[in-house]
Image (tube, rainbow, N blue to C red):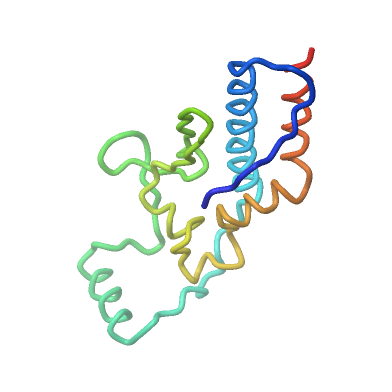
Length: 155
C-alpha cells in the first residue's frame, strides 16, 4: 500500500535538505506504523475459537496432531535456529531507499496476521498494516512527525 504525503515548504531550502526532510518523515511514518501495530497486540484467542473451513481441513489437522506434526497446545519455538521463534513484534524492519520506505517483517506468518491475507482467526483482533497506516494518518501522528521535521529543518 503506497501513501503519498504532500508538504508545502515555505522559504528557500536546498535540494539536499528537502531530500533529508522527506527521508526523516518517511522513516518516522514507518516506525509509527510499527508502533501502532505493536501497541494493539491482542491477547491470545479464546480456546475453541478456531473453526475449521471444511471437514477435509479438520481431518488433515487431526491426522497431523495424531502423527505428532502439530502440537496441542501450541509451543512457540525458542532461541535462534531452524525452529526458533519468529516473534512478530521484533520482526519488523524498514528499508529506506531515497524517499521511499518499505516496511518488512521477517516472520513468515506476518501476511496472515497483519497483512492483506489475514486469517479469519485474526480478523477483528489484530489490526492490519493498512488499518495502522490509516490510524497514524488520522490520529495526527503523521502531522506531528512532519511538524517536528520542519522544526529541525528550520532550526
